[in-house]
Image (tube, rainbow, N blue to C red; front, side):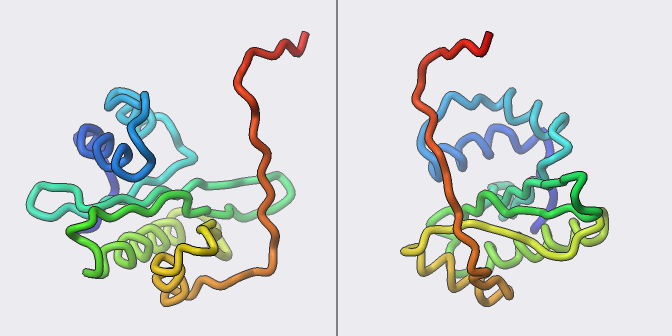
Length: 148
């Protein structure tokens, strides 16, 4: 069943996130706090027999320059044993419908690796395409910097 994540999902979301992004310092209490207090993020999960099979995160980007929100799908993960069952597509479609019902949006964005052909095929089936934009990033080296 696809649904919005709740604080009760924090323990399982921690395990899924560690499997997806590598073991991190993010604790279940951090996840619970984010689910309660982070109004810029929507987390959708798929639950199969009391086990979370996957999750999708959407960041609601908003600028004074535009009237509408630009939801960005930032994370999509499905447990290996649940892949190829349409779960990723179902979660993304649920997230899109939720955003359309609750926010003024005109489209969605997402980033994925050029070589991630499996994910790209899922996204393309859902209507996502290359928008000819170039994504740039900058890495910050760790260390304390003083701006004073």
